[in-house]
Amino acid sequence: MGIGLMEPIYWGLSWIMLMWHKLWDAIGLSGEWLGTNWDWILALVFLVITVRIIIFPLFVKQIRSQRAMQALQPQLKALQEKHKGDRETLQKEMMNLYRENKANPLMGCLPLILQMPVFLGVFHIIRRLDGTKVISGNKYGGWTLENYFDASAAKLFGVKISAAFSMGGSAAVLCGILGVVMIVTTYLTSRQMILKTGWSEEPTQRMMQKLMLYGIPATLIVSAVAFPLGLIIYWTTSNLFSLGQQMWVLRKYPPPKIGGAPEPKAPVDPEVAKALAPKVGAKPTNPKRKTVKKNVG
Image (cartoon, rainbow, N blue to C red):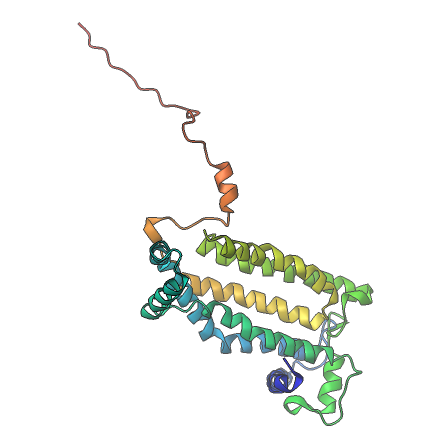
């Protein structure tokens, strides 16, 4: 994605952040308290919340599409059996089925795709708040040089938001703590979804679920070291918003019960569950004794 295409995103995110800063500044949150410039920290937090609220309708559409896809699983399996070996006909019948039931298999990726440019935009902004990358005449979203240098000096508990773990000292401690929170909340966000939807029976989708649950949090260990503090704050805030958002949406749009199967209580891998299941034909450990009444006389 070229810089030219990202310019409107940089401008919009910078403008939102500046507007929130002006609001917090207007109600008296300017200056430092507990070594923190709350006007800029809250501006960054509410930048995340604003963006997530804007794309919230797409998230609802994503959940609805996923529910429709789950409800169609028996019919999709029937089509696969019916048109085995005829890939062209199978694809045509599947698309007709999706269209009739208003299900879109691509909708699940849309919110994530939209969040990536936002993430890159925030990274671009935070990276330029180290006091060295001022570009003459480049005032995103109405920022002045005073705004820029004020934001460059913004701190959270004495650590600049442009600082990273590699700087050592208090920056390493704070980035390390928030980095752990970022990793844990990323795991909990994926786990929360699997708790309600269950593990997929399709091998490829199950692998994707494992990647989301374990792979992405693992890669964030490196990111927590490399990310500036402001970006860690952004990611952690986004995760916390996602947890609350998913809790509401999953309660409002619960997964369909296909074939009367109960919802899974925990994200247990099907292979592990199979290994732990009791063997067929095994004798019960505590068989109930039947009392036999004898006829007297």
